[in-house]
Length: 620
Image 1 (cartoon, rainbow, N blue to C red):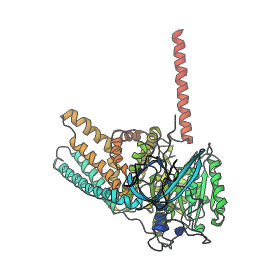
Image 2: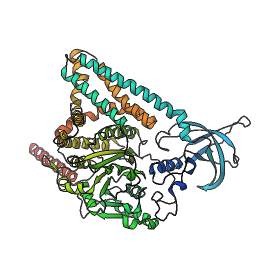
Image 3: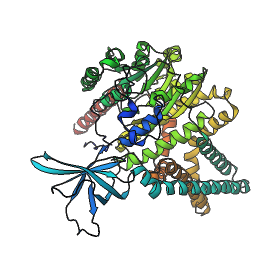
């Protein structure tokens, strides 16, 4: 099967790979090195979010799209072809096979289309902008001379986008969100009127709409815990890895290259007996980091450990926890990449002694690969920025997601035995480790969410892996929701109601869909207009919220995702009802997957033997 080629942003590499670690010798400054042109005043070195914003604005991204130079009144039509080499918020580097095409300080108007995946989400657009040529040079590429022209935009792209697209996006999204919410309320008022005709259906529609709107309301009201520059607890990042040779080097680098004090951060990579080149790739990156990181003490802070035998993700995480020397442990998936201010942000809620665990926000790294990854991009953003943010309002986030989550070390150790040996209906619980550990933490402590603690992850880009992942998530959701039910009633009353409705709505959804789309039309001859309009409004809420926050052209995929969920993913739920004790992953070779495959093969061989005996008997 041909593997899908992932489309990822490619920033130009910094010549120093550890460019974000605060320098203990003060040889260089994070602020002065990048983004100085955007500084309105002296930036506090402890304000890592502002430092990250400035550095992000100055990043150059490798690109390869055509650029059209528009002639001035004095010029004739320019027939030469120009292409971009890289682009940033402040300028663009273009090349051609024509020497001396422009003069230094010459101002031109250029037109180009930024494809999705070249720059951060929201910049994919048609652009017509003025720029000044500041430098020209030439170099040999594949035996041919290329002539390069470096341009500085007269108006930075972020300001250009605000005027041309982003400002209008926020206005339209805000207005339509309000209108959609109002229509949903009015439709539910109609449900009250017709309640007498079908109590189950209209009661479900009322609680589903109330549940959905309340989540969006609390999600919009969410605020991050601000950074306290004097709060710098020790943090141990643990990366469990199994057969992740393609991405592990990026994960390790993103975890060590953090705006965090050298003596307060360590990274532990635990290899669960990978069978590919994961160990080799990890050690290569660690060696590269150590060659540059002497003054950052990386040899003391970056550890690779291989389990003696394959034990699963939980075993790898627990092994890392026991090696950790700090009081907070951060679990990071091996195909997830932290932004350099992630650790500084995710630790802030732990100033509350009752806070037991905190989730960061997970973005999709390969969002522009294909339609499937674009659907997941919108879904991921809403799941974190709205749904988890709403739960965090009550300090009761029900899943501290695997790509980036922080825990108190003593709580993980306290629950490790139950976590490692967890069984459900006699079967070992091998997946859903993040939701399972969250339940152990929630029994005695609070859980929170920090939206500005961000990582990105590689999501499935083929349908088989995606559907296997979704089935696994549904099974673990059912299992862990039943567990959470036993103690969630002790939490804030409104949150408990929130939890109950969030449990009932997805479970009942397949029945409601069958009733509305099949039973009612067939039995009564009534077209399900109200149900379909409600579905459309739900899709609009998701899409418009994404447009409001992200200002991206991907917002429309929220509509597609809702339809995809209703007509495909939703029907995994009944399957999950009757198989949620299963322990196979479906997307990786766990011991349970190997055992299940061997059982299937044995059954297949047994059927062959029976067929062979039957055939021989008939022939005789």
